[in-house]
Amino acid sequence: MTLLPAFHFKPVTAAEMRRRDAAAMERGLSEEVLMENAGHALAEGTLLFPHRGALVVCGGGNNGGDGLVAARWLIKAGRRVTVLLWRKPENYQNAARAHWRALSACRPTVRIWSPRLRLPDRGEPVVDAFLGLGVRPPLSEEARTLIRWMNARRGPKIAADVPSGWTPTGAAPPGGRAGPIDRDPGASQERACFVPGAALRGEVGGG
Image (cartoon, rainbow, N blue to C red; front, side, top):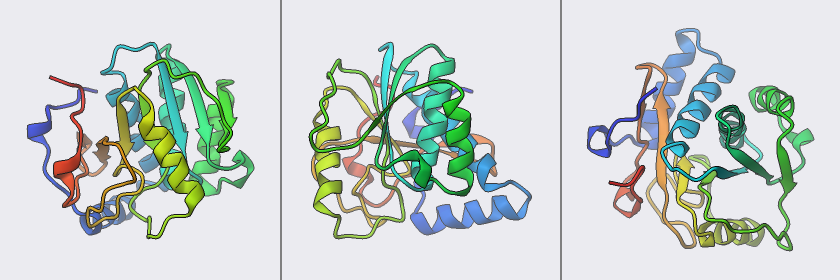
């Protein structure tokens, strides 16, 4: 899988992304397969950065499931991965639960979020799979604290769908920038999933 330069990507609204997901499922692609595709693309984007480590921050829903898949592929690629979960993994449902089981077989390093959490900051890439297109403000203070903590880390940020805290209309998160990466499963190729706030995004892969 090869990621294209940013100028090849076509902006996609949240409504269009939901339509594409629905169309893909109508063609017979399961939610589990869509999650696998999205997470695989996230991992490939993260591998563009040469650091040997990665921090994958996973929310409790489907966005978090994308992160679980990304973590598994990064481990397979030889990266030292820490998975930071918003809630205990027993809370995952459906496709995300299946991907948690698959990741568990890789024996990852897993931490559960707490505002008192202390993790060394080695400048490794941060995969932001916390909140996605379904987010609705206002965020809880605990969620805002995690987003600020994540965005304060030194490494590049790679987001599933949109950076955590952005709404589908482009409202920015509490601090930081990230480059969204996702996959268009209908076309079987990578795309950037941008919203009207795309001018605030960071570059993916540098250059």
